[in-house]
Image (cartoon, rainbow, N blue to C red):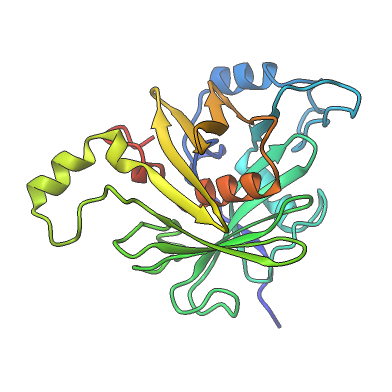
Length: 263
């Protein structure tokens, strides 16, 4: 019998908006973020807030973090189908306006859909599913996120009509044979920590901004930004943008692109 979809627990009840790691938040910070969401809040204890109605104008699609305790219900499909394969371990969850719950999960090493090193997957109703495979060390329950290596990580986004193949890497990252001092000093510059994402004929760049911010651009225009406690996709972002951005955030530790602070 295949293993059921499960959820990871932890000391923190909150999921990072900008990456795949849990991070603690004060109640005041979380409440302030929720107050800024468009629309009325959901009932007490609810995991999903009401989506904006179709006739309400919204300049951008908001991305709301979800409590990690909601991952159990999301993993079981209680808030709509997620399309996660059996044996997946949910570790990060968002609510995206107009779509619903989106989850990032771990497929352990040896899983039929993951291979020898394991993989990270993105799934949810209304989003194109995606898988990211590490090129170096394996991902597991003990180390669930992908550390980028000199060889790019492999990305596949499953569009309705085809699979879109791509990769994640850091072109300005010093090679493995560079000296320790070179690697340390180069890594202190945010520009050198940028993550390049390629899929099909598109290229995106993810970088840290401000103190706790993230910006993802395609060409010279941003497609995803965080402001305070909220993230949002720009009006021009399409299904491929959404899947690529969320799959990347769900797969990489924030320390990959955020020097020193490692938020």
